[in-house]
Image (cartoon, each protein chain N blue to C red):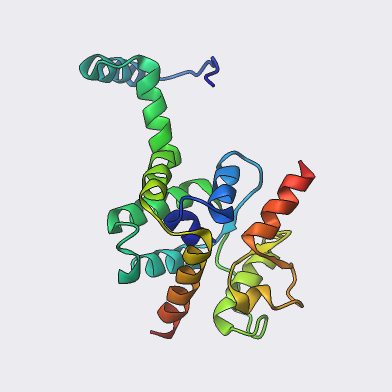
Amino acid sequence: MKRKTTVYLEDDLLRATKIAAARTGKRDYQVVEEALRAYLGLELLERVGARSKLSEDEAIKLAYQELHRSRRS
Amino acid sequence: MLISALISGKGAPRDLLWLWLDGSFELVVCPSLLGELERVLLRSKFRPYVSVQEVRAYVALLRRLVALEPDPEATAGLTPDAGDDYLVALARAAKAHFLLSGDPHLTEFKQARPPVLTPRTFLRRLAASQ
């Protein structure tokens, strides 16, 4: 669900956003949205999560197995 | 928890990561913890799941968004595994309510203060409190 909000941007940042939007055929808000998703790491988490077939238990087991190996090495 | 939250797209650790990003609770870490997280995730066993570049981006993301506390003073004997002592020391220094871990070395250590919760247990508590 999208909500309307107001943010204040420096002139040069707003200009660069509009230029990026025009160059990529996107709306201004889509450029801002993509930048925020990247800043917050959402795109990274979604990409890595979608690729992984590990279950929660398998991931936890591997994590602690490697943690202890790392501490021993 | 932070490792499994990255390498598995489902389950309690990942759900907690989303809830943290959503502001449901505060996550406290220290430079040593982030260093260990990065060291472990850079081990070759994780390459099928996450690239080196993604590991670096993940750690940078956490460094940017978490409540970063200074490394706690070294205190020996807080846990059965000396490698975990700094985690308890950090949780105490930050006055954290819980220490989250899926490591049996910690989850089975019932005398730990603050208490150690598995991601699943913490998720249930969080859901019950909302």
